[in-house]
Length: 363
Image (cartoon, rainbow, N blue to C red; front, side, top):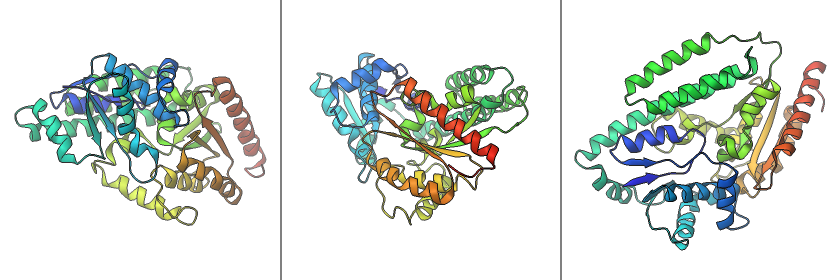
């Protein structure tokens, strides 16, 4: 069995560990790029959302690399993400590819387990528990690396040192073969980041990023938004969602994640009392909380035809006015350009700095 899964940020690191520690080969496609998007868009329905197109391109790349099993997590409720795996696999089979499907979240877990168990071999359940422990450890390590980099990038004295440190530790965590080694790397990581020469605070702007999960976490889709804000504009950008949250929430490996999700639904109930199946409650609550938590502004990033986030888009202007927090909407599709996004970001950051100088009020 050669299992493949689409990219989403750095999620491939813990996912590869999960698959390989079960004794199964993982096939990781190349990082998504413009060619990946064009390949997926060529075979996808025209008006489906952008994450569908780019993950379809990922699937094609993985099958071309020899994968014989495609794994896909499927959402629930009204969001089309719940049907991604099923529809994508129909398209791939129509294209002539032959493979086994693992639709996690739609299929009965026992059905998925019966497909995987023969490839895992003896002591399958024990190997699954061990693989889950390594998976959790690496997901937490990736989360810490990204968090430290987001803080250091806009404050570093020498541009590029944070990114180099981040890439080095992501590669080392990916290569680590034991939980003990992952913990050692995290200790080394903290020491190196603590020794990184940083400028004094000097009024660093802080921006929260809310919106659809894939757009928030996949740099190739959002034009590397977090890195661009930190390196080019000296802004600390904090996405409301993370790889760690996306990976561990469905598996109930961290109960605190469910507490924060419950709070988000409770806080946003006055604006959105229904569950739509996306990240809508995190988007609303993240924007409501932004002024209290010290953020100067909010960026709402979402794909063109995303139903949950387009509903949020109609609510956020009211929250922006009531909470006196500027909100910039960035809508992405395959026709979005780096230049257009950069121009809007520059104007938004200039406006935030102007507000800061005036004392934080006004448009």
